[in-house]
Image 1 (cartoon, rainbow over the protein chains, first blue to last red):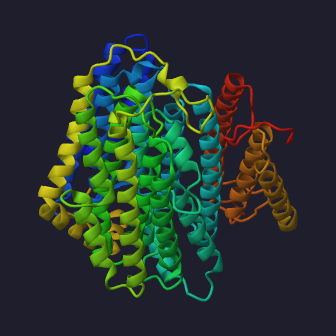
Image 2: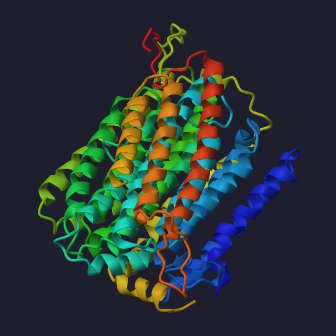
Length: 520
Length: 114
């Protein structure tokens, strides 16, 4: 057994309590350990990705209990890729929060961040459905703490909403798992796949209920309409670097959909054939439409990017809902892109917030406006999917994959029109934020103090202790560099995602590895 | 037995959903607790109902046994929901204390709406 597979979970799990218990009063040591831990995670993730390049599926049996009796961690191409993506995002967020001084505005930022990484990596690596629930809870508990980091009345109230919504999601998850266990008698994903495939299609009402309940849970996580209500308010009120980290959380939902509905309830399974894709596709198109309209409609920069995140989840889920290898290939590429682009925009928005607040309205000129405007422009064209950045490649691939679908006219129309609305939305807010400020006729009259949703003046008053803009901008430019690399090396990345998709649609490899020994 | 258990799960869920739709945080938290009780009882039933049977296989005699896995799942679920309830109570309390308002929605006008 290769112990490296479990390292992405064990490393943050050990580091976080260490930071809380030993380094509680030493911020600089916390920073050093947090950065070191994230660098190590990045190294581990690269090594894991290297292991999977030969197409093998690795299994790690916890406590050496053979599957399906014990819990297994499974490493395949998709898990390795997602762990690597998490590590890269975490690196940028850690650097940025250190550089901007965010980690000093409340306590235990780095410990909570490490716990969050543990939960996210665990969710990507586990091969057991109940264990997936447990890791969801781990990442959620950490996210509750991160979400209200820094405090403030609005943030705390948004935090209550966020926690309540996610607790409901967890309850639903348990109901779904209970139903599946009652029908199949197992919760190991590979074993579930075998049992579900053996069921006769006449007697599967309860199984279908379980499958749809589980889909609902993942849709809550992935912010699919009409279950997206938690996202705009929580992302808009969370500290912005935390929102950037949360970009990976919606992808946990997308990953789970991709995993469960190719492995267990795959397109070939008679009992649930056509059940998931038929529901998911319209919901995803609606998500994309509402997300892009939200971008056009909001008055607050955080909320605008939150709606951008919803819109990109819509595009991603359209691609997933096709449930074809080409669709999944496009989805994997777009998933990498949209995580990085969302995080980049949130970090740029934090720079804007530091200088002029978060309302999209005219304001006196801000320092470094050219640099910030340039970064916002890069993030905007990446999010909207315009050339030359990877968003264009991603959307092109999604639309190309949709060509084989029967609804392709509808899908193309939704993607193209919503992209247009997104461009208009970003152009509108960008020109107001960066250009109207130079309007010579503009007089900066203080607006009447109306409490607009998400007004963060209370947060703006917080002291920003010893910020180090160099480190913060390193993180931002790192994300830009990742986007550029993703565009330049689109060929190799696509090759990898094509092989990943092929592996996903060949579930027998996964099942053999877990249940019949395979490579350990 | 089946009817009793199904009714209990149904009643708890219905009461929980009703309370969650209230506007103040306290009833919502109580509603979440009721829902988590409902799901715990439901999880027990997923291993089939067996009365007075130990969750141990007996290889010397053919005696009834109950499925041990749901019991382990319920234990995990109880621990998690217990901790989560504590967390949400703390966050709701600090939200209430800092904004002098315990409405769960984010709208600003406070009316008499309980």
